[in-house]
Image 1 (tube, helix red, strand yellow):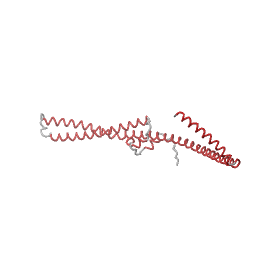
Image 2: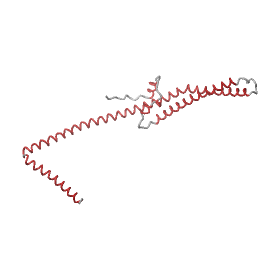
Image 3: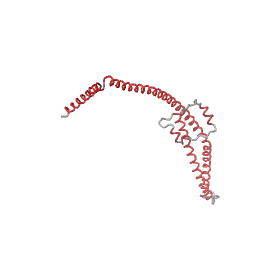
Image 4: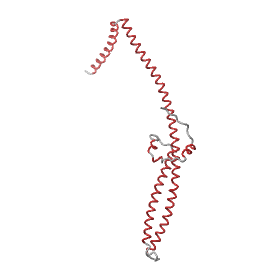
Length: 223
């Protein structure tokens, strides 16, 4: 069953249709990569693919960094509790350690806040890059489908014409074969089998003479 490709939608149409739709991260789907198997991805698709990859990598780094900061903060908090004794003495080692740990915790809190802010903003950036990639992928696929459809129609028309021509040639061949049988039958009826055999023998003898001549040459070349 055939199919028809609808008219290409504009980028604005795609964006409107995508609004509120959950689109999977394309670069993580092997089927998306298979679309471009055996060909080079267009530059615009490579551009957005790179953006999505970079945002995913950044998301991974921020998540890991936040995890490590929380772990370090937990360790420092334990140190503060352990160093509380003697911290009231200004020159006591615990006092200096406590002060240093509190300063580090303040720095960690600032870094954690930045990480959390970036992680909150990142899904929007990632979604935008992925939507751009999806839009360009759809435009590419529609263009490829239209090109293939044109080829399919042209090749289909060619096959149709060839079939018609093939049927004509088959009819011509069959007519020639029937005509040859009729002529040979008439020759037998008109001239008789003995006369026909004479012509057949003469034809066969020519072939035999040619074959004997070739065999004789081979014997001369191989004494």
